[in-house]
Image 1 (cartoon, helix red, strand yellow):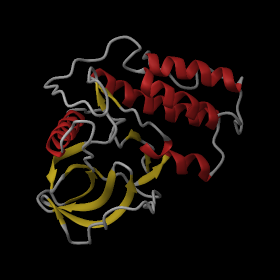
Image 2: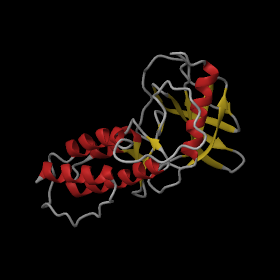
Image 3: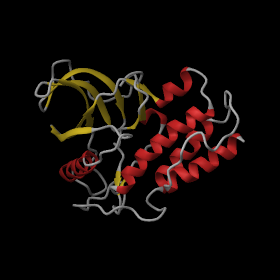
Image 4: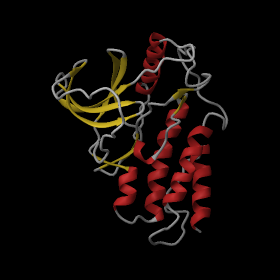
Length: 245
């Protein structure tokens, strides 16, 4: 996970190199945001480099710190059950002090934001990346998870070209009332209809259209990339192709 420099947002000091988060040994801070910090870390048990995200728990609106941590942990566990080639793999979840941590694969590559600005991209390349990301979101929807924070900085393109959606820090379990709801959901049911996918669709649609508004080259060809049948990607592909035709 590279080319995502830490922000200068105020908050607690980052953990020092050598500090421990559960069994994971901190190597360096790779990103900071409103939902938490992301560290490059070492897993001594499996001898591999991982990314560990520490999610901040913000009590309020009738939700205690304990309730907030339990809900965040429950969401992290739901993410860990998600397995798809276009979603970053989660290895482990747990608690650290008053925070929840998610240990996941460390992707060597760049964010979609960096990739799209590094050099001119054809609309076919852009569509291919967003279709892949859409497949990851679709897999999350099938597990009852809505990302709610889909953006270029939350998509990694590995050195192997694989597209992975990451940072489900704002994920909402289908059926919960909102970000401050404390009701437990032991086994969230898959979302039905468009209601469960609209939140991610509203984020995905303008991002792809904006990045394809000035295609570098190539004529419009619907056969360039196969499109999934999900509501998210069908709507996205139609609007994207209309915007660049």
